[in-house]
Each structure stands twice: as structure tokens, then as C-alpha cells.
Length: 347
Image (cartoon, rainbow, N blue to C red; front, top):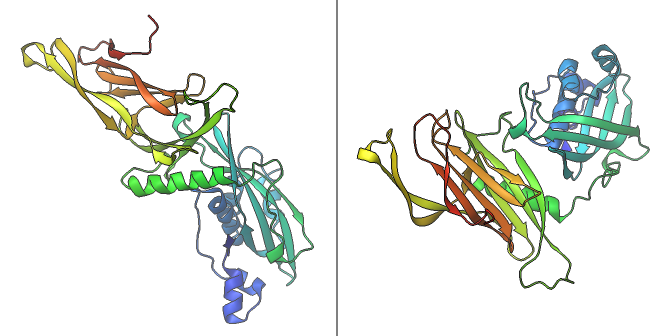
């Protein structure tokens, strides 16, 4: 992707003025942390607008200079910057997603000369759903650029060192994002307001028909944030494997018949029965446990949590199966759920 991060090059082409002159003109404000590329483009937008405090703040703990004044001084001779961004490669680690972004930049100097630099930025997004205040938005973890003898339109690296290749896995993630946005346009944005945050996992598995000597198969699981209330957070899941491709995960849930003594909802529970099953695309307060290959949900019916339902779905034979469901239907101030379905607990 080519970003006119400052629009100075486009202005120069249209008006015949120099890049330096064009860079001095007013640059539209851009502050977008919804992707690695847009974040880096926003960083250079801040540089072009001489908003060095904003540019400095796009970096995380590892800052690009000793202090903000030294950082700003490094751009004293820079009139404007244009940036190319390449194919991003992503990987998950320790509750974060790291994005490796190849870049090439054309820096117009105040003396009229131009310099080309090329390298990579590493962008980090800490899982928004597990953060405590203060919230840390997507940020630049580090950048490494070196002067290049190539022309600007030839200097962009194909990939970043130590990064996973931008392969089919990344294409699947982009497809999952697109599918999520198309099917769940009503979902609220992530806690940082930037768009749908996601977690991703790799699940090794075998079908029951696979022979022991056959290599393990691999599925990919994506969890998308889909808004929150006062005490509940919603998620939607997508799964990919070579057999069935990408699809939204539907979770089996029991349809309950709850009876109260004297038909008083705030009184004692008389009985809880299962009268059928349905499916849900959205789970509440859900998590995927890589060690047990299970997804659990915990839906509070009110804030104190004394009435609730929770489920456990285990990944086996290539899909998620409901194995336990607990219900606390009593609004009695006590947290005392009981299983209405349990195929998961050892006898």
C-alpha cells in the first residue's frame, strides 16, 4: 500500500511545486490505530504535521529517542515524508498480536534533496479484553530503517526479518475479519474504539477416522469482540480448517424450562428442565483454553452474578461440542449454579 502520508507528493505532481513546498502545506489529520499499516501511516502523518508529541506517543515503552526533544530534533531537516507499506505478517504471543510491517519511506529534506529509507516496523496489540486500566492501544513496538540506494518505488522489502511469512494464514485472518464485519455490523467497536479486536489460536487435532501414523491436522480459531454491557462482554468465533474452510462457529445451547415456586421469579426455584436445543453465534464472557481445547462462557443475568448460566464446549473431531451447562436461576444473592447437562465431569 502506498500512503501519501502528508499528501505532499500528490500535491507536487498536480501543481508542479516541489515536494518540500508541498510538504509545508496543511496536511489533513490522520489518527487511525485500526491496523498496523494505518498506525504507521498515522505516525508519519504526525511527523508531516510537525506534531511530534503525537508521533512520539505512537511508540510503546521502547521509544525511538532518548526523550521527546531529541526525537523532534531528529526531524529538524525533514520537510515531509511519503511511505510505502507492504504485506503485513502477524503472530500471537503471550496475550498479544505482533504485526511485522515492511516499509519504504521517501523523506524530503528542507534543502530540496530527498532520501530513501527501507526497513520494518513491529506493531503490537495487547489483547484488549484482558487489559486493566490504563488501556494500552495498538502501538509501535519498534522500528528499524536504513538508508537505501534503490528508487523509492523499488525499496520496499518483501518481508521482515524474523517474521512469519505473509501466507495463507494471514489471508484467512483477513477473510475472517471481513466475514465478521459483514455478518455483525451491529457489533460495537473494541474497547479502544478502533474496530473489532480479535484473538487467534491454532488447534492441533485428529479426526476419529485418522490413523495414528498420519500427521496431526490443524484448525485455526478466531475470537472477535462484539460489544459489552455493564457486566457482560460478547464474542463471536470463526474456525478454519482444510476440510471445511472458514465458517462462523455455532454453539449448541439447551432451551430451558425454568419453574419458580408460586410463579415468583424472585422466589425459590421449583425445577429446571431442558425442552430442546438451539444454537447461538454469540457467547458471553467467553474464553478459549488452549490446554484443554475448550471454550467456556459465563453469562450473568444481573450484575451481582447470583443468577447466571455457563457452558463448556470441547473441541473434538474437528468441531466444538457442548459437554456441560450450568444454571443458577435463583435471584437469592448467592452464587450457586447447578449442572443441567454434564458429559464433561469424570464419574
